Image (spheres, rainbow, N blue to C red):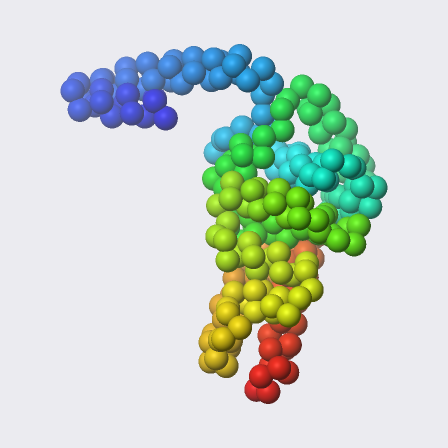
Length: 246
């Protein structure tokens, strides 16, 4: 940010008084840049990049990401809408969930939904394990009507890059929603040529990564999603145990 750069320059030349003056000037330039940015885009993004993000910010912006997935294929599927509504009501209660939906509907009339800005903000303010769960939740929405389309997978993949998710982790979660001969291997992030020792090592790694205990700070409905993801890892491992006979 300009303010901190200006503060450092001011300190180098004039020590502490210079740092204060530099910070104030930098703050003015930052604010000017923000105003110019708002005028240029016309609509403000739903989620701005900030360090102190309230729970409501997260909930509204999770709804924003959900809407990007729901609208990915050009149609609004009722089953996908119901999936999101049920999730939020289970997580926050009907009254609060309805208020969140109402607030989101009002916000999207005034602000442009930017998956990039939302993802970057979440990346800066959420643990990696929690961001993985966001991707799992979005795939759950896409699968609510029985099938994840290619365009839905592409949209979620794009969101995952904004969230800073590693490609192998994205492919692992994606494989949990597709049934094919390679699914178990992809879930464990290994190749079909993996040895028994490599399979066991991969399983231990995935258990640590996806263990629900890492998400105890999140709401109950979110933790249930983490438990489902953890169960998929166990099922993949058991499938390979049966195939390899170990």
